[in-house]
Image (cartoon, rainbow, N blue to C red; front, side, top):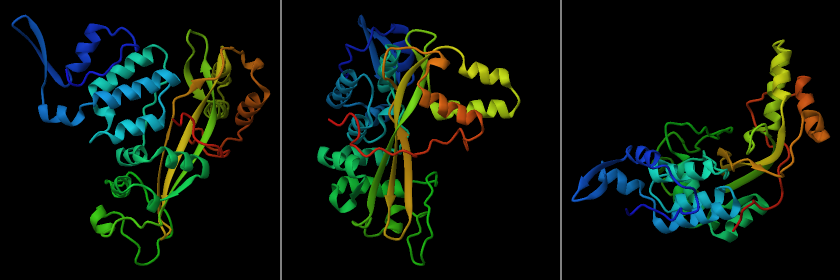
Length: 317
């Protein structure tokens, strides 16, 4: 099979699960004593095929770090016409890694922006992580083309925001109409990142169900506001392990004042093997949760960037 990458360290894959996943895109038959797997839709299969070398590099980076990273996923995405997440092999392989306890993220940035990030050189990625911005004139033309496509991908799930001056581009148009001469080279790609505290449910092994601390606080606040003291107590019961999750926001700023943005995150990862009861958690985390219980959290569904980091992004290779 052309699409098979070197995933020998992932885990032993159950044959029934393997066949079930592949059956979404492939048919099977016996031919002269051989079990033959062939694509149901050859054209679609060609588009979603994972290049053996780039996928192997992605898996090697995953094994080394113990978790997927946005940088490595962006590099993999840049090598394909569509998102790797559309490949049955990608999903099957990462499910196998996830079952072994590796940190796996389902990155939610648009395919064009992710492809653009994957085309940045290491120096440009480091600069974006350190300074928080890159002028479009400094990035490769291919990356600018992907960013242009990102700005005008409809329907408008991504909202342009700003007080738009008269004569500014109508960003509901396609890219050739909105920007007939391409994006201005003095437009800026801006990046921001936060490391968020995470609590893992440590009642089982390994710890599972990571929850961002600010969301736990919001849920406790909501339960108390609804008069459900028992629900609030259940949220704080059990045993916890500590971790972190890096949240990213990317924003494209135009000279006209318009901007478009998207956010995603690396997976939550454990920061130590110790487990805690609620009363034994570090004081700053208990204070954050209890502040939420007093109603000081505005919306538990919103992750903010109140404490943006200044250093380079993690997993920069």
